[in-house]
Length: 226
Image (cartoon, rainbow, N blue to C red; front, side):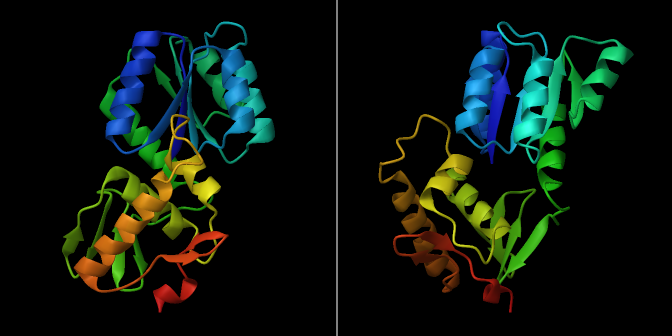
């Protein structure tokens, strides 16, 4: 899942980015509202962590932009504005959650996880595809209680394909959701991770669930449920 942190406190922004990347998320950062609008125009984000007190463009204006042009993107307001009226206004403008500074990082993680799992439809935490089970809480894949060890990127690719099962997903779309802006979209990074993912699944479980559609992308077939 790809996240955007919109926070003008550099130390807090860097700390959140590091912590969330350790949890397997792809993370971009904006230090002001103007750059946030730019990032939102060129990238797709599953969730935005949004401060309200921003330079150049106010956080509430960024919030309105997100709800107008990217209604499926989840939003957590992270702000020192603590009055009930301010919290109500943020939620009325379309935010999905509101966390007051200072906050506990563990609580933020739970709120992110809950919102992402509610994206589009309520997804179960255990998703079966073919003979395998994807555990979205533990971020592991298993078969008959045997767990497959994947890197964060390998798991992210597999999870996104499972969530979009039956559809051919382009390399560009996978990169947009699993990587941050640091990746070169023309590099061989995605092909390398997909190849490694397919090899691990075959060696551990002797099944093929991810198919490459030449010139189009990758797919997990609907038939893998049967």
